[in-house]
Image 1 (tube, rainbow, N blue to C red):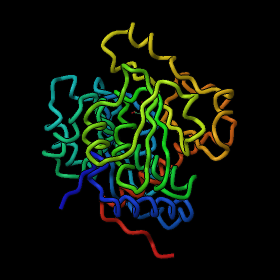
Image 2: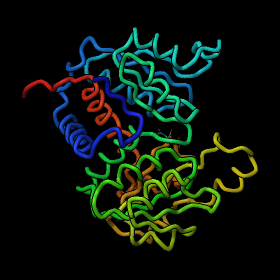
Image 3: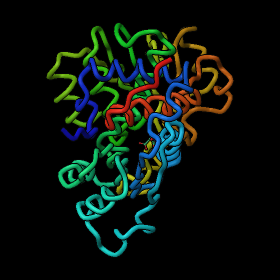
Image 4: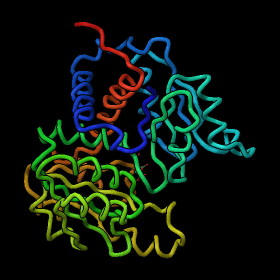
Length: 309
Ligand code: NCD
C-alpha cells in the first residue's frame, strides 16, 4: 500500500524509532547506503521558499544513489498558469518515485496524496505541520541527549504559525514523561489544534510563559524559532513581535550545562551569533542530521534495504 508522510502521526512510535536508528546507522556507515536508491528519482515540488529542507532532500536522495528533479517556486511551475496541485502530482508522479512537497496552504500535501500515484512527503504546509523537520529534531535530541523520554522541552518564539513546533510537540507527546514549556508573546501562543487536541487531550504537562529567563534553568532542550513574517496579516504586528525573544550569551548563562539549543533555521536574529560557539548550540549539527533522517525516510517509503556489511 502507498504510504505518505503528511503528519508525524502517520508514523507509529515504533516506526519513528526505527527510522531514527536507521539514520544513526547511515551516519556511522554511509557506504552501506550509497547505492540503495540507484535508478530511483525524487521530485521536490516546492511552492514556497526553502534552503535546508529542499537541499537536504536532494542531498539525501543523491547520497542514496538516486536522482532528483523538481521546481523551487510556484512561479517556475505550471501553477503560475493555474494548474491545480492534484493535476501537478498526477503528472510529476509519472516522472518520479517519491514527491516532497512544500506549499503555503495548509492541507495541500494531503490533497496531493489523494491523487498521487507515488508517496507524498509533506515538506511543510503553511502554518500547519512539518513532519520531516520533526524527524530531524527527534534524531538530534536522541543523538545529543541519548533519549526521547523524560525530558523538559522549551519551545520559544512563534508557536502560533511555527509548523515545526506543531509537529515536534505532536510527535514528542507520544513518549513518556515529556513536559513542555511554551515561551511566546500572548499573540503567538500555541493554536488549539495542538494545545487542546494534543496536549490537553493526552494529559501532557505544559506551562506557558512570556519570560524565557524564568524557565531556562529547568530545560533539557530549548527549541528557538523565528517569528514567521510571511504568515502575518500586517507588517506592524510582525515588527512589534519579532524581537521579543533574543537568546544571547547572558541569557544562556542561566541554563544548565547540558541543555541543548536547537533551531530549525533559518535564524533571523532570535539567537545572537555569539551563541553559535557555545557547545550547547546544536542548530548547525541539526541541519546535518536532517540529511540522514531524510535518507532513512526515503528508503522506508520506497521499501529499500541497506546493503549487507
Ligand atoms: C522551518 C520551516 O520552513 O517551517 N524551516 C525549515 O524547514 N528548516 C522554519 C522556518 O521557516 O522558520
